Image (cartoon, rainbow, N blue to C red; front, side, top):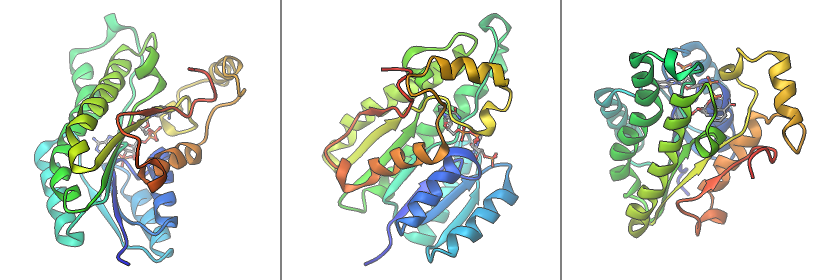
Amino acid sequence: MKNKTVLITGASRGIGAATARVFAQNGYNIVLNYLHSEEKAFHLAKELRELGVAVLPIQTDVGKYSDVQIMMEKISEEFGQLDTLVCNAGIGDAGLLTDTKVDKWKEVFRVNVDSLFYCSKLAIPLLRKQTAGQIITVSSIWGMVGASYEVAYSTAKSATIGFTKALAKELAPSNITVNCVAPGLINTDMNADLTQEDILLFTEQTPLGRIGSVEEVAESIYFLATEKAAFMTGQVLSPNGGVVI
Ligand code: NAP
């Protein structure tokens, strides 16, 4: 049987890289999108090819429509189809709203939200070539409950949930499910600025008493691409240790 193909945006590091590993371990061909971390992306591609799957690393800024168009053309030429799209690429931002620059606000939306529109719009024709397809977005607990000092990020991640729910209804007749994973605090570069004290404070407020791993988020994302989740659409799955219930 032909391998399935997944496009994972922001797969050079963190949650995206862990997600690429899980899909590859399950026999998927991987389109490994990255922007700046070329060395990491190429290193990961080499590692995944050793599992016997095809890997296509593509450098694309997912917040630029014309670049996403080129990426989808390359995927179409190489694989002719897509089974799953994982919209994972994202950037954070912290600071008081009164200190947030207009350009920063726009950048947070460009990378976290515009990218969902561009990638989904252009992936849908490739997903429709299958009898079933999945779009999986990555939000955050802050998109569910809001974080002070992170209004731009929280708003963008809240938009991600709205996007997921609306598109789920639109694509259900095509048997394409659209679900969201909204993690709690995860140990990645995105949180490199947090102090040990910040992390301790957060874990004390988390019922399971720790932060999460990239592997745990990757498994949640993979689950939504499997047959086991075939009757789920428009849902938010939140691996967060119980900090938001
Ligand atoms: P990360 O370690 O900072 O990695 C971010 C990834 O996104 C990198 O692979 C980066 O690629 C890519 N990226 C950034 N801007 C891009 C662009 N314009 N075009 C293409 N790729 C781009 O972050 P992470 O923690 O793994 O976060 C992944 C997702 O999970 C994000 O959507 C984030 O908001 C969400 N999330 C994270 C946490 C957490 O605690 N870490 C919690 C909840 C939700 P390059 O390095 O190649 O540029």
